[in-house]
Image 1: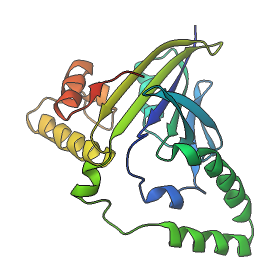
Image 2: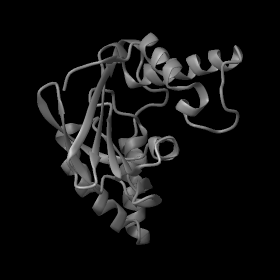
Image 3: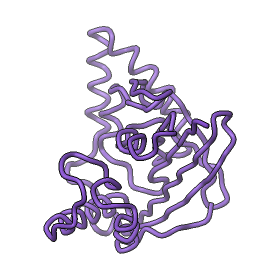
Image 4: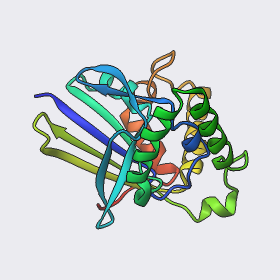
Amino acid sequence: MRNRLAVLAGVYAAAPTGVADGITLPVTVWENGQLIDERAAHRVRTFKVQGKKKAAALASGTEILYLPAQFPTLESVNVYNGWFPALSRGLQLVSAFANTAVKTPVGERVVDFVKARSIGPAGGPDAAERARTRTHAVAVARDGSGAPLAEVHREGPSIYDITGELMAWAGHQLARGRGRTPGVVGPIEAFGIDALTHGCAEIGLTRSTP
């Protein structure tokens, strides 16, 4: 039976500056066994997070590249961004408007102006700001009919801290010769599921309840 996987990343993480800039860029998804491009925030899905329903918009994610290779029965893999749960539906409308507007010279200039005003300062949030935010990731596997098969929740520090810590951990593993597969590969293929799970626990990613 073919399976589908939906991933929600960073419900409580601070918003990256690339959200506004990427609203007119295509989002690549793994759909029906192939990579296809869709409009950013074209779809909105709700996930249960700490007892509440949270909306998230379709976004880019590397999961679409390495999960199908590791799990061939995955027919579809989609990633959703939940940084602004309450604004996900609005983001869907903004994406539709922006992607239509950029097809004309005047509309493109307007969208570029708005994006320039929306992007925050370079460098990302400081340590104090990162300490106030948390990351909650959800992965839901469904069968071909859409019925849920499994659901996993992970919670940890700010998504910025998680990214930096995981990159440092991966570099440390490679420096010690613990890489399993050379080249550009996903984390499971590079280090193995057991080592990756241990590494995530080291940086503070723990299993949590829905």
